[in-house]
Image (spheres, helix red, strand yellow):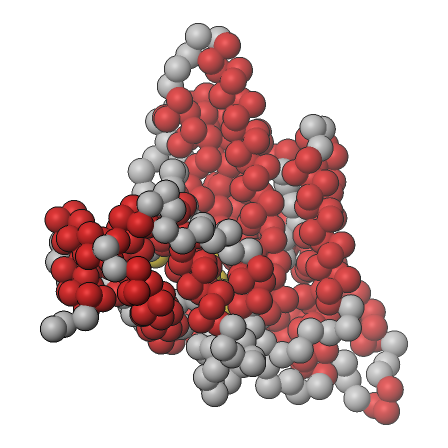
Length: 401
């Protein structure tokens, strides 16, 4: 006779609708001896996700989006158990594992409900598509995309995180602006130092990639904001709206900068939007959805423009400083590399990597803003959240007002 676990999986995982899930869950609920094998198969399904290019944060984000928090917790438990078998994990995985949600107790609130949730999760995991990998799978022999961090890198990132946390927490717009600007300037200086060091030492470090969630609602505006932050930090962002994330391609210090700054600016923008919306409601207006959409579109557009303008200034200042250094002469007669050629070479490397990873991208026309008050408040919020960027070139095709 076919084992219960095979009967349950056949009924639930390879058919659509709730009837199959209910049938499979009923079989599992009546047979506690199948629990261990059920969990083992979940680890196998998670392992298949790694082979398809997924990472822990991607899986949990998709489970939350398509199912619910209970399923996300079950997935987290499977991920933790599956990854515990590896002595060495790919770059960025440890931080993702540390951020996993808690795992709910098994067989609660009852065996049937838990089995139904587990089988629904397994059905989703089996149907995850193949996506572009942004690093080797765990236990694989693929090339690492990230070298060992410089001795000062953890301290630098800690300082940047502290500045952005203060910017998010303060109730004074001018203070938030100053703190965020300082954080971006630290990122820019650190990235420029890394670029010059790599040029002097003839480093063979190549661009890497990471994925950043772009969640509903108003995901188009959020994707535009992320694109602006990525471009200002010498990266390229490719948005996958169907799967709810953008893949950001760039050198590692710049990827860290994009992730930190985008997260902070989104928090600042959401807080500003909530305050502005409260003022609109107090005035008797209730255009909530249109107001929020227009606010975030304006916020993203305005920040993109300001990042581009500030980028030109920061790059020019750094080039002037490096020019003064070269004018003083280099030791042993070796000329120090010029900043602009070094940055141009890195830009070309990032573009080539992005085009190799995504040879068939498309440009989508996005819907414009429809609420003038939302647009005005969003623009003002972006001005208050002004930051100093690096790259004077912004990719064409962003939504214009």
